[in-house]
Amino acid sequence: MRRLLTAVAALAVTLASALNVSCGGAETVSVKQAIGREKNVVTPQLNHNDEQRLKYFFLEAVSQQNKGNYDAAFDLLSHCLTINPNAAEVYFTIASYYSELGRDSMAMQSMERAAVLSPKNDRYIERLAISYINTGNIDKATDTYERLYTNDRGRTDVLGMLVQLYNQKKDYDKMLNTLERLEQVDGSSEQITLMKMHAYSMKGDKKAEFNALKQLADKYPNDLNYRVMMGNWLLKNGREDEALDEYDAVLEQEPDNVSAQMSMLDYYKRLGEDSLAQVTVERMLMSDKTQPADKIQLIRKVVDENERIGAGSMEVIRLFNKILAEPQTTPEMLQLYAGYLKLKEYPQDSIDAVLERVLDIAPDEAGARMQLIQSAWMRQNFDRVIDLSRQAQQYNPDEPTFYYFMAMAYNQKDDLDEALEAARRGVAAGSEQTNKDFMSDLYGLMGEIYHEKGMEKETFAAYDSCLIWNSENIGCLNNYAYYLSLTGEGLEKAEQMSRKTVKAEPANGIYLDTYAWILFMQGRYDEAKIYIEQALKNYDTPSADVMEHAGDIFWKCGEKDAAVDYWQQAVDAGGSNSILKKKLKQKKYLEK
Image (cartoon, rainbow, N blue to C red; front, side):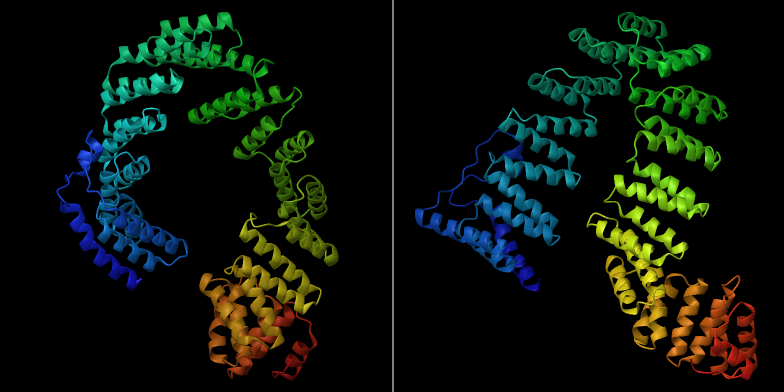
C-alpha cells in the first residue's frame, strides 16, 4: 500500500498538470462545457509511434491489474499519461484506484476529465453521473444525465432517472417535461400518469392533475380501473357525488368489479354509512367472483380498521368463520386466521386446530407445521413432535429444522440411537444456504448425544464442527470446555473457551460453575473459589454436581468445614456417586 501511495502522489502532479494546462495549442474545455453543452472537444493528435506506445503500456496496465499487481498497473497508467495527458481511457481506469484509496476528489477529477476528453462515451458519462449522485451533487448529476440523453434519445432509463432527479430538486416543470419526453417514447401508461399527477399536485394545479387522469381514462375506456381511480381522486378531494357517479358507472358494467367495490367501502365510511359498508364487505367476502387474493386484502383491511378503532375481536372472528365455513382451496385465509387468533391471544388449541386445516390443504407448508411442533414441544408432547417432524421430512426433506426437533424429542425420551440418526440426517440436509447458527446448534446437539452415549472422540468432533459454523456458540463452548476438563487434558483450551462464555453471560450460574471447575483442575484454587461463589449466587437451586464442585474447591482453599457442608448439600440434592459419599463420610477430599 505504501508503494501505491507513493505512485499516487507522483501521478497527482501529472494529473494536476493535465487538468489545467493546454497541450500543443489544443482547445482547453471545462467539464461543464463537455457535459452540459453541445461542444466539440479538440485534443492534439499523437504520432503513430506514441499511439502504439500508449496502447502497449495501457494494455499491459490492464493485464497487471487483472493479475492483482496493482502497484505495477498504477505505475504503467502513470506512464501512459506522460505519453498522452489527454488519454480518456487512462483517466477513467485510474479513477477506480483513487476511489479505493479514499481520494474521492481526485477520483472525481479523473472521471470528469475522461468525460471531457470523450464526450460521446456513454459509459464514462454515466459513471460520472452516478458519482455525482453518490456525492449528493444533484445539479451536476442532472446536467450529466441530460448530456447522456442527448447522446442517445432512445434511453428511457436515463429519462426515468431524470424524472427522479427533477422530483428531488422540486423542479416540477422540468419533471413534467421529462415525463412528456418519456411518454413520446413509451406511450401513455398508468405509472407515467401517476407521476404527472404527483407533479401537478406538488404545483397545486388540481385541475391539471385531474385532467391527466381523465385523459388516461378516455384513452382506455375499456379499462374500468381508470374510472375507479378517477372516482378515488374525486372522493379524496371532497367531491363525493361525482365520485359516486364514477363508481356506479363501473358497477353498472361490472357488478363484481373488486376495485370499485373496495372504493365504495371508502365512500360509505366517508359518509358514515357503516351498515352499508358491512354489507358490502360480507358480499365481497362470500362471492365466488372475488379472487382469493382480493379476499385476503379485504379481510386484512377489516382487521386493520378493527385494530385502529380498538374494537373487540368477535366481529372479525364471525367474518372469518363465515368465510371458512366454505371449502378452501388455498391455505392463505386459514393462515391469516391463525395469525389473528395468535395476535388476540386465543387458546393454543384453537390456533392448532386452524393450523391442522392448513396442513390438510397444503401439507408442505413448513411454517404451519413448525408452529404445531413448537406447540407440542411446549406441552412436552414429544411423541407428537416426532410424528409432525416425520411427516415434514416427507414434504420438506431439505429443511434441517425438522430433523433437529425430531432429534431433541427422541433425546428427551432417552432414545439416543434414534436421536443420533435424526441429527445425522439433519446435518446431511444442511447446505451453504442454511442458517449458520442453526447448523451450529444442530452439531452441538449431536455432540450432546454422543456424550450421553459415551463416544468421547465423536463428541469433540461434533463440537469442532459446531464451532466452525459459529465460533461464538456459547452453549457449545461451555459444554466442550466442561467435557474436555473431565478428561484432564486440554485444560488450557478448555479455560479459553469457558472464559468466553463467562464474558458473554457473567450472571449465568452454569457457565460460572464450568469456569470455576476448570480453574480448579488447573490448580488455581483461589480464582476457582471466586467463580464458584458467583455461580452459587446465580443459581436458584444448585445441582448436586455444583455443590460437590464447591466442596472440592473450598477444601483446596483450606476451608474444610465449609467443604464438608457443601458435600452434605450435594448429597441432599441427590448426589449419589461413591466418591462423594466417601468424601462426606471421611470428611476429606479424595481424588476421583
